[in-house]
Image (cartoon, rainbow, N blue to C red; front, top):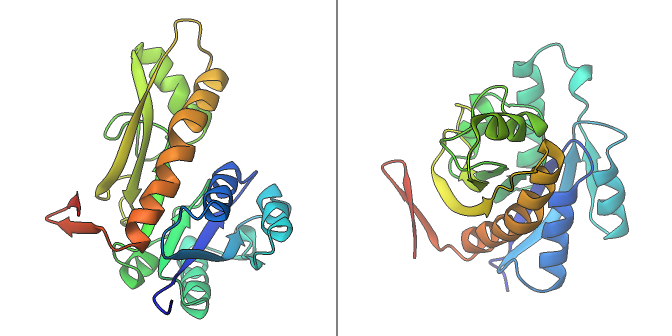
Length: 210
């Protein structure tokens, strides 16, 4: 099968979304995709341990080794080109790269966001902040969104969304856990599979699943 697509996963922390992708791959659920490399912005990210245990090549590109986001973005772009990435997946990757990367991989970079975009997204909405704001607003449902990455934060074409009920006694932590388990870990591998099987069409900023 020569049309296997190389998936490069970008991580910064524990790598639970990476694990969901690894598990999906071991079940044969990534279609024509194969995780070929994991790149971490932190040397001590537990995600690197997960990659090693699964026999997946890993590299580190430490954010604080670079003076600014432009030089860091260029270095990341060069790594992704070296690794011949067909698809780049942000899995808890905490650095917003500039357009030099997006321009090199148009509609080939995806992110999972722990809310139903356009709610609770954009600059500053990451990690527990998203769930704190959702609870503050008193929303009854939240969820997760997988979208293509553009230079504007959380603004790229939406691929998949899944809703999750918000409970009255939720804390940001319990809501985060439920959204991960019920939404993120399901729709991220599914979106990767759809991409690798060439089932996603983007037209006028919207996606259509073939």
